[in-house]
Length: 147
Image (cartoon, rainbow, N blue to C red):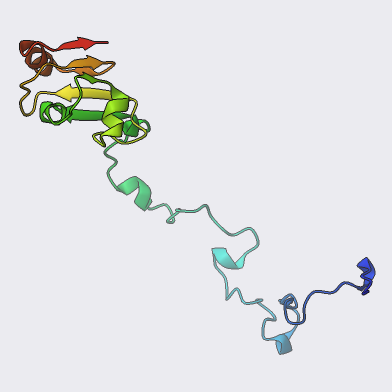
C-alpha cells in the first residue's frame, strides 16, 4: 500500500505557476516601471479609486433616472375574475380550491376577486377578498363572502 506523508505531497505538475516578479531589472521585461507605465495616478502606490468613480464627473449610476419599484412579496398576491369562478365546478371556494384547479400559483397566499366577466351561479367564498363591484355581483346571484 502506498504511504502518503505530508512532507512529500506536491501539487500536480503544471498546476502551479511561479509568481511574476516585477521591478527586478531590465532583463525580466518588467523592470523599472514594473509594467505600470509612466506617471499618472495608476502608476503610483495606492493610486486607485473607488468603483464607478469617473474623475469627478457625475458617475453613470447617478446620471441615470431612478424609477420604479417591485414589491418583495408581490408573488404572494393574486387577482382572479368572476369568469374564473364561473368555470369552477364546486360551490365553496377557498385558496386551496383555486390552487388545485390551477387558477392561482402555488406560492399565492392572498386572492382578490375583481369584477371582470360574469357570474350566474351561487358561490360561497372563504378567505378570499373581493372588490365592491365583484362583491355585489356575487351577492346578486345569491352567493356570499366569508372572510
